[in-house]
Amino acid sequence: MRKTSPTMRLLNPLCQRIFEDGSRCRYPSKEIHHLSADPKLFFTPSNLVALCKACHHKDQGESADTPRFYAPTIWLGGVTYPHLEPPPPGKKLLFYSMGKPIYG
Image (cartoon, rainbow, N blue to C red; front, side, top):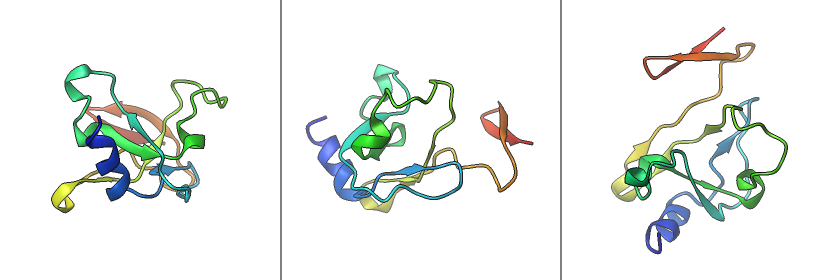
């Protein structure tokens, strides 16, 4: 990830984490997070998000199954890769159906 990580942070200078209230973290991105641990996707931009240290820290009290929301990843040529967005106000993520979030 010697070239991928600096490129990700250059193109996504702010942490991509979006909190459940819809606000976005405004700290500088410092680390790259893999959305899937699949080795085939390790350097795939659609599988990566740039996060600040606080949002990437794994021991901050969130359970592993807590849904996490991210701003789209921007990549070379202006290509963007959308990620799971926060639920509409007053709604909660219930489950996924055919890859799409279902809110209730």
